[in-house]
Length: 165
Image (cartoon, rainbow, N blue to C red; front, side):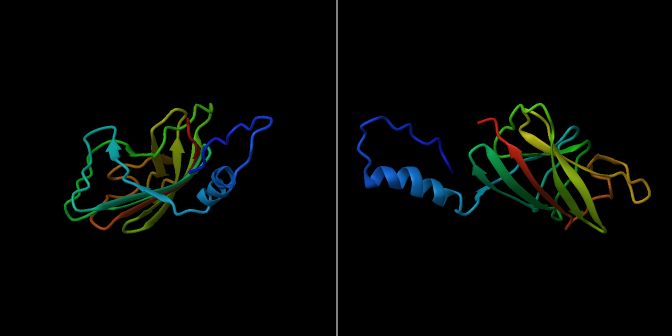
C-alpha cells in the first residue's frame, strides 16, 4: 500500500535506500496484487448465515482511494435471514458528505443488475436491486428481493470509494 511520502530537509543526503523506499516501493505498491479480506454478510433483521457457501473480498488501496470487489456464493446450508443485506468493506468510508455508488449483480435463477451504496462514515455497503421482474424501482436487496435466494446464487459487488484514513 502506498504511504505518506517523507518530507525532505535542506542538506539531507539522499541515499539509494531512501530513493528505493520513497520512489520504487511507492510505485511498486500501485502495481502489486490486490489484498484479500473476508467480508462479513449481515442484515437489518435476523442474521443470515453463509453455512457452506463462500465469500471472498479483494481490494487495492492507493492513498485513500479503495477499489474493492466482493463475491459471495450461497451454499446448500446457507440461511438467508430477514431484512436488508449489508457487506463489510475493508476500510471505513470517509465523511465526504455524499454516498458512493458502485455496481451489484445477483446471479440466481435470473441475472439481476443493481447498485452498491456506501454512506459517509460507513463500514459496510448495501446492494439495491429491482423490486421484482415487473417493478424495476430499486430497494435494498433481501432474501426475497429481487428473487428468492437459493443454493448457488452469487452476489458480485464492485465499487470505488474514499477511505477515512
